[in-house]
Image 1: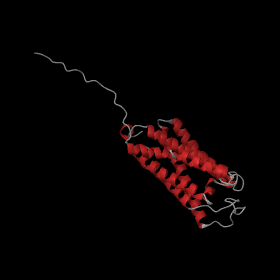
Image 2 (image 1 turned 90 degrees about the vertical axis):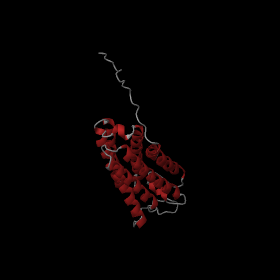
Image 3 (image 1 turned 60 degrees about the horizontal axis):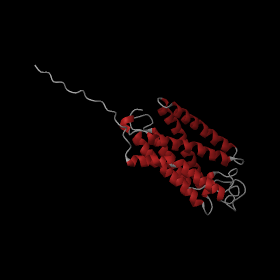
Image 4 (image 1 turned 120 degrees about the vertical axis):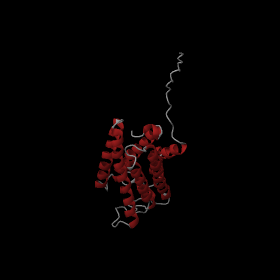
Length: 234
């Protein structure tokens, strides 16, 4: 009786599957949020006559002859966030934050678009010719701007804690970063609102730097992950 021996199957390492090009583009939209918004805003702060960050919020740049630049900055940032939310839904499929993470990021994007379309009231001498003090009555457009602003950042702050829960099991540094961002952002908003006539603009700019940087960093992390079938449940 002859016994034939079969060669043992060899185990080879499987390469990590990459995201589809469409998904990569959607996630890259999220990576672009912080640099795009902040570079455009800071450039205008430096170049537009009469703007003073110690007196004016960044959203005040929506007003005036060149206000369309900041309007576009808000709207494009919101659109990028919505695209990122779609890509994040694909990457987070089956894992924690798969539902509420993209929903909250998308809500942030919608809020930014609303805040960009509806301008705040001119005040504190900006743009040139505006009243030197705060407006006595808030216009409807300013109210809608405020609604969009607070809606956007409420959603983004909530997203920080949703992603903190996702990261808690395997990336504690990212979880801590998310929690710190989620706590610092409302503290800055509350402080900025409390000192409305003093340094509101500085605090609101700080909110944007802190939260937008976090959002772009999360997008970059998701972009670096393998495709969903390799990370489901993580």
